[in-house]
Length: 562
Image (spheres, rainbow, N blue to C red):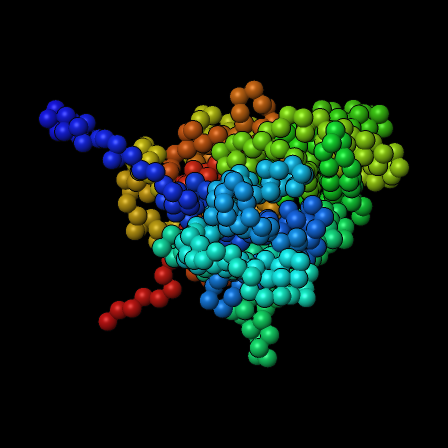
């Protein structure tokens, strides 16, 4: 840009360039700022925002039934039997309170501590954002035997709130909205996505009944697909569901459960041990899934390690001494399925996706609650306690064996002075960004691949049959598999972090190929091999997946020729 162009640009930048977005225009202008994104995830988030309002009514003690309908035209209807959004005149805004809630950002009862003690809706923008991002929305409020209604187009009211009839039903709110196809990349709702979230909410808020009905999907008799979610045992039932869903065999039949309040924080936690080798922890704050964890998770893990380690040292000292091991925190969490649910009046979220709880006081409250509950359980159930400690000792033994196996693999790697796998047909380039590694099924496929490859940038590693199913194997067993070792060695990665001898984290700083391509036959066996290899990467080298380096080739089924 020339100096003259710069001067003209500066002169053209004036008050007329400053835009003031009125009402909900800001939401339509930058929707991702308010709902995360405009893809399928953001589309379903609209439903969650409306349902969250009903859940908040339930938490306040005024609602116990929520109905969600996916209508034939892909609009959504949510109806509850709560108090109904207030419709009386709002003195400050000079309009009905219903219109304020539906058309003004940061408006709602969640900012008034007298209305809701805790809330799952963040920032008070929920239902108004849904209104802004819908081509049309209709709200019906049932209060005191009367029905009130207001309709909106792209967030703007089409008329003032009006009384449209009387009702015999209890109070409540019904809202129907049509997502804007000009904003979202798709407006087709997935039943399974809504099903998972509504089931989750029913477990997290025991006693509430939530129904999901899909009017697009009807059987031969015209009955729509429908499901009802209701739980009387809450997260205790949830943890059993999750354990069964993952096909885990329980180590003990008991669910270690606590439902208490510490330092003014309601805490509900369910713990279940299984015979597997993974930790599966699900944490929630005010029904929000805190996928990045936070202080409530720190408090839980601290208490778990402290109590179990003390119990193991007092009751199994000889076994620990004989095994010559030092038990660490991760050993106590192997085979553990946990659901943590806390209710916080003013949660502070942090992290990349704002799904990490930052309230420091919550750690101590959870730590205290878990410590007391776990101590009581171990004292009252010595048989089950011994089973848990035996598994912990086995986990520690396997962790140490895995470390030694990793060290052996890494000594054999090029970084450790060893050579490449004998079957690897490497490429000549040493620039990782342009290099590709094809993992192929058997020597015959390897031979064909070698003939068709570009020697400069494409390497071929044939694998013998189906590799070890690491999902069902102990951690160190994978490193005893020749095929797994060959993959790790060819990739040039290491395991462990400086200062953490037993870290399982894959270090991909010296990854030799930035495209790792799984290429198997287009049949059932090939699909099985695909799954086994993907599981290896998912469980042992997720960093490669997260960095976008893992691919699957789509081989042709047929070839047409003259």
